[in-house]
Image (cartoon, rainbow, N blue to C red; front, side, top):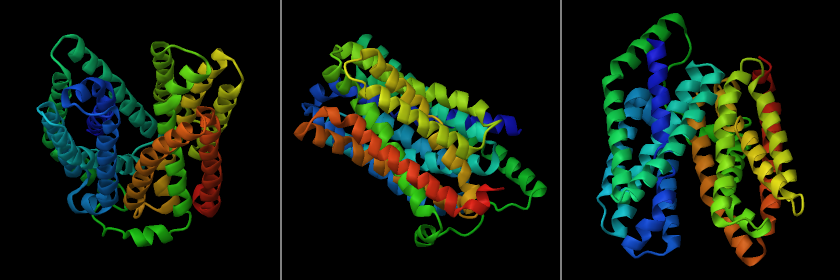
Length: 394
């Protein structure tokens, strides 16, 4: 019974990753049809990001009122409907409106499932769960590419992903009794806190020892990750003279490094603690940045981005998995909700900030820009560990 539920959770995280890379794959074609500037993709992206922040902050209240299963099923349905509406859009303003449920649905799935896995499953499942997100995010560009090359257009690409999401939402609603059975079985075996407790106020969360440092750590991680994802290709074109096609191919290795790294990290959790894996990841990120800045070395720069991806792999899932231990299971959903909001804020703010700096100063600043967030992560993680020393010693 638990094994079937775990499989459903994994499928849910594949579904979470599926829409994430659709817009980037389709926008060069979409913008021509909508007669929109290239930069207008940023408007849609910011609206989606804002929606995820709002739903993440509301996740504690919603999950404790309706339960993880119903929140997840409803959120996936919202995303599926939004994707379908994208597929039938004929004007740019329609995309802006439909981006609202798109973001709200994604944030609901992310925060609710992350907390559920952190509370009830082993650390390896958290890493593999986020690996499944990578699988979903890697699949959708191929789906969009198929739609574009087959002549059916970007609409068909969105429609295919929408159908997959609708099928999954149906499976989630059908599985609601399974979630209830697993919850009842868990309650009879343990006196641990459950999702029926009262919501924790954000004000109370912010006053929790180590919480602010944890949120800054999340902000810094996603700032580094998303900036690298967006700008690695441009950096390699300018500084090691790769062609656009070759740079795009090698830039994807950073993303592959994260996905493969999380798969490997799942096995490493059997031997090492979360905080050890986070520190190892930070060390790998530093090694990657050093490789990137080696002057006039194409191979070192390319390898550097791969190492950077491998270093990023354990950080996000490991911090989430530590949350119930560090801050208490009664506060974990609220904590993870604010963590997700902090992460999305980093994703939303840092990439355009680097673009602004690069435009007015130089693109060479990328390694230093990433280095600032690495230092912030390192300091904040150690502050979290120190301030919650009694919990981490367990």
